[in-house]
Amino acid sequence: MVETRPCLRETMDALGMRLVDELTRVWQYIRLLILISWFHLFKLMGNVIDRREGVIEQHIAKLMSRRILEVLRASVHVEGEEHMRNLEDYAVVANHLSYLDWVVVLAHMPKPVCFIAKRIVVLMPVFGSYMRNRGVLIDRRKHQNARAIIRNASRATEHPLMIFPEGTRSPDGKLQKFKRAGIRTLADEGLKLLPVVLLGTFEALGRDDRAIRYRKHLGLIILPPIDPAELGSAEACRELERVIHETYELRRHEFGGPAQLERLHSRRRRLRTMG
Image (cartoon, rainbow, N blue to C red; front, side, top):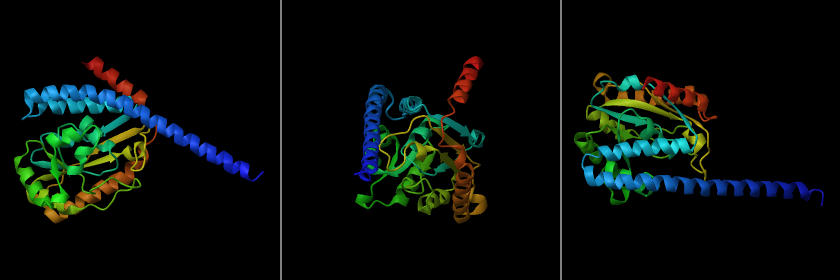
C-alpha cells in the first residue's frame, strides 16, 4: 500500500497538469476566436473594396498578427531590417518551427510577402482564408508540378515569395534538411535569396503542443541576401542552408525563454515619444 501512494500521487499530478493544459487551450481558443472574428469581419469588408490589390487585407493581417502576439504576451526581437532596404527581385527563405511562424512573419516582416505552401494550410485556423486569397498553394493530391507553380508565381506576383524549404514544422525544435527544389527554382529565375531565421516559436508552440505557452521571447533575424548570379544557383542554395542553420544554432539560446516585456514596453514608449 505504501508503494502505491507515490504512483497514485504522480497519476493525480499528471491528470491535474493535463486538465490545466486543456483549460488553457479552451481559454486561448475563446479569446483568439473573438479577436479573429472581429478582424475577419473587417477583412471581408476590405475585400469588397480592394480584393484585387489586397492592400487592406495585408494591413489587417499585420494588425491581427500583432494583436495575437500581444494577447500571448510575447516579445519579438527583429534584426537585420537594413538588408531589405532597396532590395529588388528577391525571394524570402526561412526555417519552419511552428504555426506561430506565420504570425511572427505577418506581424513583423518589414515588407509584405506571398507565402508558398501546401493547399492544406487553408484549413489552418486564423490564416487559412488569408492564404486562400494571398498565397501560392500547391495541391499534392492533384499531382501538381510544384516547380512550375513556383516559377509562374515568381513572374506574376507583386510581393516577394516566401518559402519554408524544410516542407513542414520541426518535430523537435531542430532544423531539418532543406528540400532544395523550390529554392533552386527561385534561384534559377534570377531572384536573390533572402535568408530569415525564426527563433523561439517552437518553445511557444511545438508540433505536439495542445496549447500556446504565454510570455515567450521570439526572434526574426534577416540575414544578408545571397545572389545566385554571383555564386551560381546550386552554390547559392547550399550557402543559404548553411547560414540559416549556423545562425539558428548560434542564436537559439537567446530565444524561447521569458518574454522581455519591459524592453518591449520601453521601445513602445520611445516610439510614442518620437511620434
